Length: 129
Image 1 (spheres, rainbow, N blue to C red):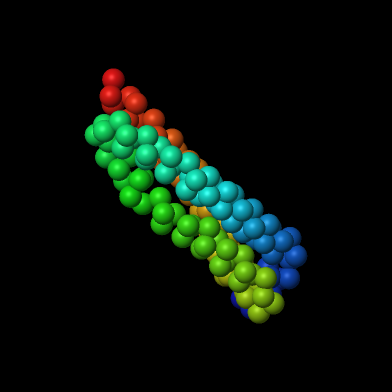
Image 2: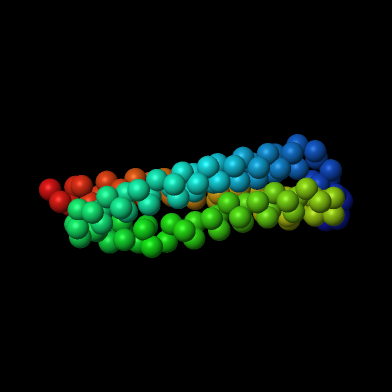
């Protein structure tokens, strides 16, 4: 079997493409929800922290200064979800495999965003004693 035949066999497996599409869609939706919730809740905590006049830990400052840019993560997974919807790109196994990897990276990013937000919100309470 030649390399081209192996590639064509891999692409023609419908489960591979369906898995990539489902993973991409799920990762995009999870990231949109997580980033949306963080963007809705974090400003409330910022107001509370500023009202107390407490000095914030570095991790809290970093999260507060960067959370508006976290919309990039669902944007990336959405681009790959849209890309594998097109017939031409869905026939390329490299794109399908990359889209699965980006989706898994999206889930990892969502978990990290939740952890960082949790730490940023609760670390000032612990540092104040």
